[in-house]
Image 1 (tube, one colour):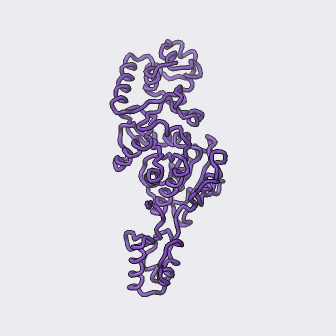
Image 2 (cartoon, helix red, strand yellow):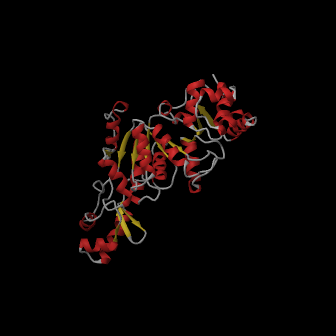
Image 3 (cartoon, helix red, strand yellow):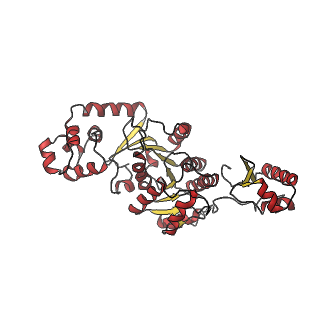
Length: 374
């Protein structure tokens, strides 16, 4: 069995990606034999190997760099999993180009657990964030771990919802595990590391360059039994994740949205192409089939309705009949209800105090889902 130092040494060779790594492993079987091979042997046995990679393998500084990685991992309490480790996720190991190494901050047990990917737009709507939060919360309560990418928008809401549920969530980064991106999510990242796991395939100090995020997406889908796309524009990184999921034989789910919203164009296209429409949590659990039994208690709705709210007046119920989970300006509610502006304002205030309605910026209002509640 090769040592972690050998795995790290080979992984640090400049220009050697997962596919190049796989070619070398197919020939030599392990990093130790690669590192001990001559340049001539490597050229002969691995056709097409680049000069840059060859020089990197032969570099005298490689072991020293790997030693520094090990020291930093110990300092930051980061585990490094290799493909030969029993704790390396089996699902991920079986994709076309699995990462040779995984840097894990937190509990490595979450990385190999039964998981569902949750992805969507960074510039997401309030509706999308609510659905992502609530669905993630409910999924973790059913024993699933939510995997997402720590980006702003839907990813953030998905992680937060999972933490609100059982806490089982994994964040996959497109940079080194010691590089905080986006900076706004520093506290969230720390909370995930404390309750779940933060994961990266990249060495310490790797910057969040744009090309790394599509590569990151294959890990999100690779760790998951299926991927849920909550919101996505026509051209979106979330659709790349869905494509990876299909290539890897994973289930693809999509949340329907407004037909006039550009944020729903990508998800609606997925639905047209055969993705499973998600209306309730059970839609996901049923599709995953043998992994779950629906005999247990399942919270079905993605967002609670107001049917269970007591002590609503006739006027309050009437106004609620014109409201939706999508934001509406107060002028529209006044026009639809036929009530006086002062009356609508009074009703909205009492409904907000009862936790049924939420006020948004620009005098817009929407039904409040169960998002964020206990």
